[in-house]
Structure formats: structure tokens, C-alpha cells
Image (cartoon, rainbow, N blue to C red; front, side, top):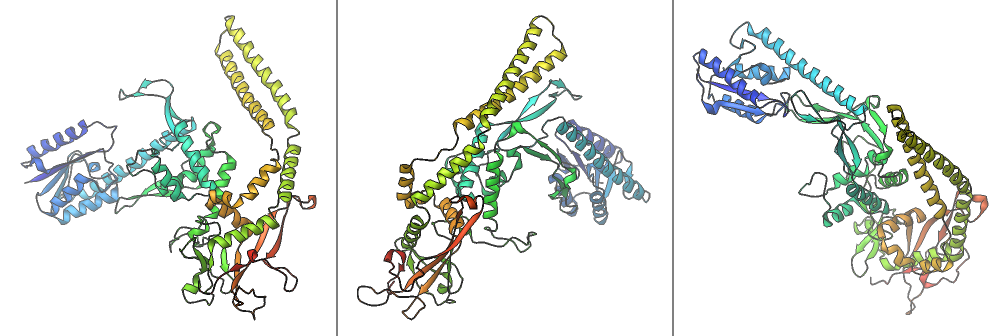
Length: 581
């Protein structure tokens, strides 16, 4: 009778000699029962869990069984085939269908025996219970390490794990420390801060990824492909960077048919959470700005039909990643559709997107540079005046100064506490020098040193605040920025576009096509009417210009025309378009 042997061990921590022992037991059984085996029909899976069905050697064994290359399969015990009762019973039924005998030497089970069915079911159930028990014990050990302040294998960019405690030999003679703890990796932490900084400034994730790869910044695992959008997105959403470390937020669940695993969220009551001030890389203010940016770009990516979040609406990518100052905020007054960059000639021309689709009659085009110049000029004339900005800066300086009145007193108080803590630590040192050393004194010294270190950091922070209190910039500085406002905005177009979007809201462009419209027309040099756009926008700004409105917002409708009938309007305020464009 031709047979095959299958052997397996599940973990890298187990000895490879286990395979030799299993094969030796199976060969002994084969020799004693008038069976034969070829070396090519010995199938071995090393360091693979018995709960996984897609094992290379096992799948090869099943294919050979389909081809009738042997008449029986010999294993040391049924747990070598599978630790899952469902998978093991499925394979037994499959071997029965193929008329192949299954022999478990240690269990004393042969499948062609009528009395073997009960033994197979009991053994499969026991193997599965063993696996469940092993999972519970493993989780219990990991929880213990976590509660003792050790890491349990988390690999997070920006941190590295270091062994701590006493080096000892375990039961297997392997050298092991008490545990490992996370510490900030300075080089990686700088990259994390860079990613958050660029994201908050308005750069797209795709742009951030491209710059990281261009600068050849190494990844955590050294991927040959470098950085990708998924990795950067996870970093920008990881609460660990602001000190919130949560464990057991999810668990792995395996598909019983395919063996594939997926992550399933655990109830919040099962989480193990802790705040680690020593592991803070991103402060709360920067974290909140990043989350606000996430809200702004929500829906910019294609949303699947089966998405669970039905409240998320699909938005244009331009909505959060503007290529130009006014991208994504202009609408057609006629149809409500988007005003987009239609022509690429010169600086480009804005026009109604629906008109290109033949669903709107507004075919008017306007040069991009003319729109930007007109709106920025109007902002400088109506809102961003030298007097307004100077008053706002002075008001902010006054508000900040009023909030800093308590700082000098706090500095005196902290300095006094700091000096006392230093003296306390020195007293303990003098006591030890006199030969009075004990564990209690040592612990008290550590506490005193930790206290003085903390007070020293607080004192440095307060002194930094006092030295760097906000001061209103000189008038010359404000004037220079206003004169070069357009160039300043174009230095970081995406960030500037987001700021203008908050300030102006949606800009509606109303086309004025002929003299019979509700508005007056402008004649060109030849005496013919020139069509143009009238822009409608809502300007919002912080109400710091009057004490009565402190802390509130004020707004007003602004239209590029005066309320008086037929006023004199300069050409700079109207967006002219020649008929032949």
C-alpha cells in the first residue's frame, strides 16, 4: 500500500527537530504495517499555524491525492492536519471521497474503521479547544506586559523599541529581557512633524508622498517602493503621536473557507488605553489642525457605493487641493454649475463647465489672471487695508498681553518650587554621602529628581512664553506685505486658496450679455457693447475692529457695483471679455 506522510510544526519558537520526530514515528508505523513510501511523498510545513488551510505542503498533498498518487496519508496526530475542527473534518470527508485512508498514529485512528468516527470528532474538538486555550493564554500574557508598561510588538513610525530590565534565560535557554519599551526615534519623529506640517499648510497627500520619495526618506520597513498614500494617511490619523496609546482596538478573524484574515473592531470597553507624555511627537494644537484639514478634504476621494458612511458626499478634488487661488469656489449665476479652467491658453480662461456640456447658455470666458487681480485688488481696497490690519494686530497684541498678566507671578512661584526641589534632592545626596544608604532613600531621591526635572521644564516653558509674547509688526512690514499680496499668496497656492475660500465663501459670476440687462453696459473703443461678469461674494472676517463684537463674526454682501443708479465704475472692477475670445 503506497502512502504519504504529512508533518508540521506551528511556531518559529518550536524546535525543527519536531519534524524529524514526526517522520520517524510515521515511518515506524509504515514499516510495521506492510506499507511503502517514496521520499517525494513526504510533505512538510514549517512554522505555519494549524489554523491556516492554505499551507504550501498541505495543498501539494491534496493535489497529489486528487491524482491518485498514493492510497493513504499517515500523520503523527490529527492536529498536524489542522487545529480547526471544521477544516479537519472537511479534509477527512475529502480523503474518504477520494478513497484514501487517513491514519493518525498517536491517536490510534484509521478512517476505514467504523468505530473511528467518534474518535475523529472528539480529537478534532480537543485540538480546537487547545488552540482557543492557547490564544487566551497568549492574550493574557500580552495584556500583562502592556499593563506593566512594556510594548507588545507595535511597530509605529517615529518610535523604536528598546530592551529593559534584567537579562535572563527562559525555560528554553534563550536570553530574554523583562520586556521592551518604546522611545522616540529623533530622525523619524522629525519626518512625522514634517508630514503634519506640510499637510496643515494645505499640501495634498499625493504631493507629500512625492516629496518624501524625491528626498529618499527611508520608510520603517524599508519598502523598495518607498512611501505611499496609505502609509502617510495612517500617520496623519494615528493618535499615538499625541500620546494616546490604545491597544486591543481590533482583533483578527479568519475566514473558515479561504483562511484569509480580516480586522474587526472591538468594543471600546475592551481597549487598554494610556496617555504617554514621554512619547508625544505632535502637540494637541497641531493634531486638531490636521483633523480639521481631514474634514475639509472629506469626500475628495471616490466614495464606493457600499460605503458605510452615507453622510459623506463626493466632492471635487479641487475642493481641497486647489491648483490656483480661486479653483473650486466660483459658481455660474445662471445655472449654479462650477466655473472651471476651460482653456489653457496664456494663464488660462475660466468658464461655465455646464456650458461646455451644452446644458447652460453662459458661454462667457474670462482670463484667470484678470479674475485673481480684480478680486485681490478689491480685498486690498475694502478689507485688507493698512489701517484695518494695523488695528487688528494691535488688538491681538492687547488681548495676548492681558492673558499674560499672570505669567510673571507664575514664574516666581515655579522658580521658588524648583529651587526647593533642588535643595531637597541635594539633602538626600548629602544623607547618602554620610553612609546612610537604603532602598527607601534611593526611591525618595529619584522622586525628588523627577519632581525638579518637571518643574524645570515648566519654568523653561513659562520663560519662553514671556520672551516670545506676540507683538504687533511695524507698519512698514504690513505695508510691504500688502503691496506684494498677490506674490505672497502665490508662494503657497493651495494654502492661500483654502484661506480665500474661508474668507470669500462661494463666488457667483453673473454674465452681463447685452445692454437690456438689469445692469448698465460698458462701451469699448469702437462703441460696441462688451459682455462682462459681475462677481457676487460674501466676505467674512473676525470682528476685532470694534469691542462690541469681540469674539463674534460679522459679514456683509459685497457686489462689484455701487447701490446708486449708473455710478462711474472703473474698468479694473469689471471683468471684460472680448466677443471674439
